[in-house]
Amino acid sequence: MSREVADVAIIGAGIIGAGVASALSRRGLDVILLDPTPGLGSSLGNAGLVVPSYATPMSTPGNLWEGIRSFGSDAAPVAFARPLGLETIKWLAGFAAACRPARVKRDTELLHGLATRSLDRYVQLRDEGLDLGVREQGWLWLSTGEGNLESLHNSAGRMREAGATCEVVDRAAASELQSGLGERVSSGVWFPNEAFLDPAEATRRWMQDATEHGAQVIREQVIGAERDGNSLTSVRTATRTVSAKQFVLATGATSREVGKMLGVNIPIEPGYGWSVTLDDPEGSVDRALMGMEDHVVISPLPGRVRITGGMRFGGLGGNNPRDSDIKALRDHAQAVVPALAGLKEESRWQGARPMTASGVPIIKRIGPGNLIVAAGHGPLGITLAPTTVDSTVDMIQQGRLGSPVH
Image 1 (tube, one colour):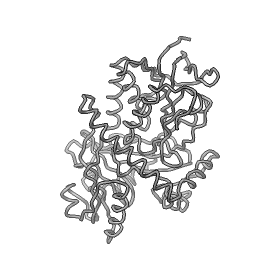
Image 2 (cartoon, helix red, strand yellow; image 1 turned 180 degrees about the vertical axis):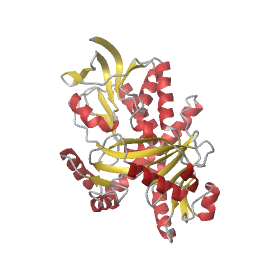
Image 3 (cartoon, one colour; image 1 turned 135 degrees about the vertical axis):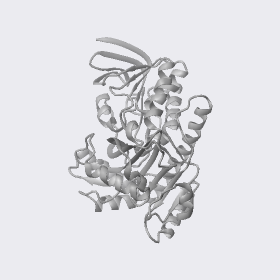
Image 4 (cartoon, one colour; image 1 turned 90 degrees about the vertical axis):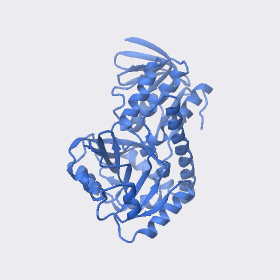
């Protein structure tokens, strides 16, 4: 078995791991990334949104009630499916505790601040020559409900209180922002300062920048670890041992399982979502859209359009979306933009979002003093990636080994 040595070993090469590797290698540190399939987790098939307005915790009283009502079915944006394992039940207890209004308000303000700084950092990285493809073309929520203006104004008011910039628009104004709207679209909410990107391409570019600055990528699964007192000394794959001064765990929805291997408890639950990507050479969609009643997101990508939705806990998970789930996505999207009905399917995807009970990601030292966890971003992994990278790099440079950072 060969041995590799680095200043920092990063377990997980999604957008967070790639970003941390890029930032550290640019600072002259020896970095090793370990992941059997770099960039093929949630970074592959998600909506690619950079949206401070959506940086609200999922743990709200309304979502809790809807999830309870929909238990065993898919009738709500947040669904709980059978079977529910013991770890999921424990997580749900924490989810219920996080639904207290005062905590929701606090966490919303925290997440919105992080997300706003992240959008600024994406733009700053582009100005500095590292273009991750962010497109600042706004985000348009569209309602297919009748007489929904009062509800829209209430929603927009709450989001403005949290710091978002938005305005309620009628059908005519919405049609100026997105052509070819369906007959059922009545109104919407416009967020002019939001952005989006191609998540797989952004991850690839960040990974490429890391390797160009000296980072090494090992396409293997971590299967074990060694510790010396309160420090992690190395991790093992099937063919090699990787020793490092500090370690970063950025394994998304599998963080609980990987954490157990490293001797730490990471309370992250997989929340399954799915997407379908359609060929769209003519560009049917002008900007990122979302159907408000069903939370289905429509994202324009180069030559394609992606339709994303779903949040299911429990059940059997897996990587293959059900035909019924894909059909539901397409039906919802076609009600908003009918031209999508004629587009050919390119690919479909199902993956697990890494969910904490509160909706706030875990970015801190945990367990061994030289292990930093950067995971649990839920549906906000793309939105919060730059600030997560900055926080992780700061902790590594501080080098405070042996004491957790909260």
